[in-house]
Image 1 (tube, one colour):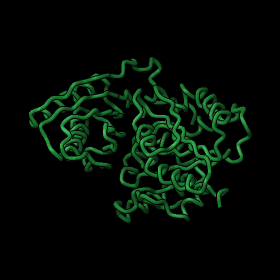
Image 2 (image 1 turned 90 degrees about the horizontal axis):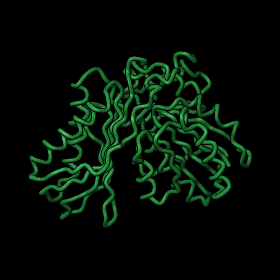
Image 3 (image 1 turned 90 degrees about the vertical axis):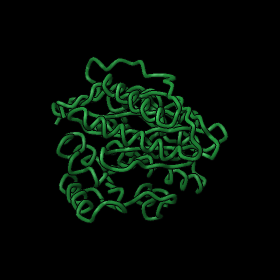
Image 4 (image 1 turned 180 degrees about the vertical axis):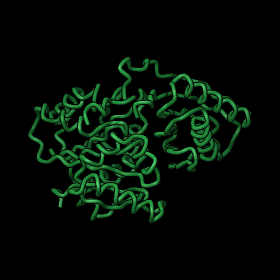
Amino acid sequence: MADLILEPYTVSQHWNLRVDGQWETILGEYLETLARHCHEAGPCVVGHIKALALLPAGGYVQVSVVSPTAPASVKGSVPAGVTELDLALNVVVYGLERDLVEHITRETAAHLSARWQGEVIIKATEARPPSPTGLHAAHNHDEKE
Amino acid sequence: MHLLLVTGFLGSGKTTLIIPLAQSVVQLKRRVAILVNEIGEIGIDNQLMRQLDLNVWELLAGCICCTLSGDLVATLQKLDADYAPDLVIVEPSGAADPRNVLTALPYYRGRPLASVRTVSVLDPLRLPMLIDVLTPLITSQIRHADLVIVSKSDIASSDQVTFARQTAQEINPAAKIVCAHARERIEPDLISDLVPWLT
């Protein structure tokens, strides 16, 4: 475990796509692709990649992935006619640096949104730098065992 | 105030367990508060729980088993003073070591805790890999549990469930081990296992 750093990446995104009623599938594909690309980027353990969009008219859609090979879990739904939504995304992957995870997240969103003739705008990115003590990189568990 | 600490690795099913449990206890006219600690500055679980009208308190941008352990105690005291719940459910991040959370609790100075119960949620699908790669964390999450819940038993193979049960038994022979999977309503037996003081 001591070899696997943990630098979680959190971001708010605004998605604007030319779609109607396909959000659950698209967001599921987004997170599944993220998990796969993280896995391909280097030795790592996908902890949890999860996203939530609260809809202005009420309701929500929540998507999560815990493995590069398992399908996304989707809860809630997006009503027909919705073409824009705000997505909170939390990517927790052991072993990959935050900058790399951010790059993968941006590139995957860009490719996916282009396919749907839309765009993804980054609204806010977690600015907190990695802990100088390596928060959760090892948690010093080994020393305490 | 009773405290239920729900631990388990990221994505093991903690939130999926907590939501119907909290809803069930609320239906029994008990006051429930959920204290959620997520890694990252944007909470996702707490937004979802609020969407479902649950009483959620959050600790963000750190971990309650290390950098935020003082915040955990302070938040528990404020929660006790401001809301006086019958049950507070603490959900640490999946990267948290429950031992460190339990170590912080004696510094709490609110109403005495009527009970402290620790639950560990195990994902049988990933346990063989996790116990191999993240051994100290996963071991600690099992070792400090009063109750181990093997989640996702509806999609795991019988071999995976058996491995999870055996692993938990070997690490923590004193813990009760049960299987569960995601449902909108939680089984009465599981409620009894999680909050035995209620029944």
